[in-house]
Every structure is written in structure tokens, then in C-alpha cells.
Amino acid sequence: MPPSARRMADPVRGACLCGAVAFEAAPPLRPVIVCHCRECRAWSGHLWAATSVPHDRFRLTRSEGLRWYRSSAAARRGFCGTCGASLFWQPEGEARISIGAGTLDGPTGLAVAGHIFTHEAGDYDAPEGPPPAPAPAAGAAKGRCLCGACRFTVPAPVGEVTACHCRQCRKTSGHVAASVDVDEAAVIWQARHDARFTTPGGGTRGFCAACGSSLWFRAADGAFSVEAGCLAPPTGGRLTRHIFTASRGDYYTLTDGLPQAPGAGS
Image (cartoon, rainbow, N blue to C red; front, side):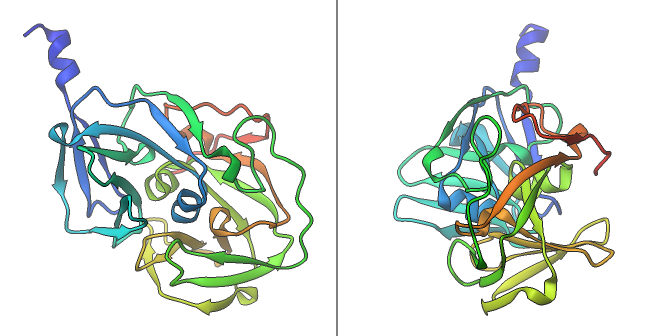
């Protein structure tokens, strides 16, 4: 076998944030599709971007943290029960598995091929171009996980939304995280079944223990935020900036013209 063919056969590896789920996939992998549907937004906390590979070219190398949630009659979603990372989407009757592109390690060599379910995009963002003006909102914005085991409200309008491209957020969301800062004391829970994971930097991530949906983050200094994707419109929010863009995935570019802070996120 020539050297170029051996390189093509080298597996692409990936894992959740904590490492309790790890996998490898043999190339070629399908180009990345970004999904804006309500389910993917609620589950990942913003957007879910996935590649795909046939089962016979996919292998779990560590699976003790893997949990599955039946999100519909047509598919189930795989997440890490330890750190809450949004990892896999498995449609029924198909011999392929979709993989969150943000969970892949190292350069992927992939590129975004398109966006789907754009009509369900959050009101704080736009699939292409600058985000829309904030939708009128007052009182409270409703948040919930995908399965409904976690439900809460936060004061509206929620204001500025920040997209984070650091490695930790990419690993947990499967692509890019987006959040709004709130006073934790102002979060009113109607139902709560969240699990918690302490990050290497001393922060705490909250996610639904039943379906894996990303919900909130408390920084080591106590600052608190909720994931924008789990909020139902109208939120009164608008994406205003990108942070830790030096750590973004190699498969996408930023074209909305918003301010970018390269940073050095882990």
C-alpha cells in the first residue's frame, strides 16, 4: 500500500470532554451538516453540527459514560452521562451514525456542506449573515431540556448572547456553545433533574441527567449563564460576539461580521 493510501486509512479519533466516551472512525467522513432544529438546539445548547460514517467504519474505544435518549420514533441521541457531551445521533434502520464534529480531536479536514431546518433557528441568531434584531420580550423566557425533565424561567429580555469556540465548549456541545449571563438567583425552576460536571478549570456544567441537554454553566468565580439554545422564543436576545475563536474547529468559518476574541481557551 502506498504511503498516501495508508494516511487515508488512519482513523479519525474523538471523545467527550471527560474521556468517558471515546471513538474512532475510518475515513472518508461525510461533510458536516449544521442543524438548527428545535431538538438539536435544546440538546446541544445552540447548534449541532455533525459528520457521518457507516457503522462498519466506526468503533467505540471507551463507552462506560455513554447514555442514549430516545428523542423520537425515528432516532436516538447518544451523550456522555458524566460530562453531558452531545455526541451521536442514530437514526432508526440506518447503518450510519452521525457524530458531533466538535467532539473530533485534532484537524478534521472536513468542511460544512450546508445548514438544515433553518426555519427553526433561535431568534437570537441567523444561519447566515448577521443576527436579527432582538425580538420583543418581557417578563420571563422559558427554558427546558429536550425531554422536559428540566424546566425553568429567566428574566427577559435576555440581552447579549455569546458564542464560545473553546475546546471544552466544542466537546460538550458537539459544535459551538452559546450562552447568556444571568443572575443565578433569578432562575426559577419548575422541574429539575440536572447532573453536574466539574471542568478542569474549576467551573461546573449542568445538563439534564435524562436526555443530556446542555443547560447552564457556573464559572469558578461564580458567574452564571444558561445555554441560549434551550430557551424558547421570544428571548429578547441577540448574538453579539464570538470568544476563544483561536480554538474553533477547522471545519467552519465565521461570516456574521460580529466581534471575535481569539483568546486561548482550553
